[in-house]
Amino acid sequence: MDQHQPGGVSTLAPPTAERATGVPAEAAAPLSSYDATLRLTDLPDRDRDLEPAELEALAAAVAQQPETWEHLVGFDGEQRVYASLHRDTHVDLWLLCWVPENDTGWHDHDVSSGAVAVVRGELVESNLTLLAGARETSVAAGSVFSFGPDHIHRLNGARHGSVSVHAYSPPLWRMGQYAVDDAGLLRRVSLSYADELRPID
Image (cartoon, rainbow, N blue to C red; front, side):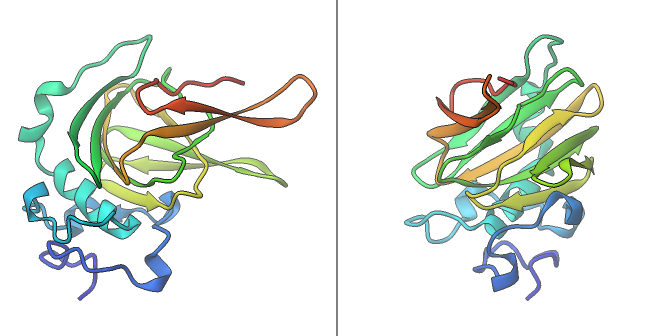
């Protein structure tokens, strides 16, 4: 059954080969194409980490359940507001609230795969290319995308009041933050998942 068919994601079937590394932001899927009734307690095989396509289905489902996160929404012009929605041995979920001043800087998620579901407003994902510099993709409300642990990106809120749900597996412990040093060399700084991401360049 197609991963995007309503009712076809509650089993979180293993992804097809072409979806094993995730769906990039430029090919983001509509939230409405996922089963909105999926709950964390419905997840099968809780003795393993989830694949990007499974995280995509989970983030999309939680994004469509505002009763589980609406009370945590808030905005601060200085810092990004975020809250943990769930964390266990194999997956964690976060709610992030954005204003245009919020910028994660270039980062990776160490060994974790992830998915981002945009609930309100719009996010911009940037990917760094060696030939053309940063490539920006706007991801509007009602969209979800996913990625594997090798993904490096930068996110910021394109509109005030943007809200997104993020799912990671295995749960985040470390992340890598990237910057160019005074000699022009790209360097990676390791930081805890509990630290707020912000540009260091």
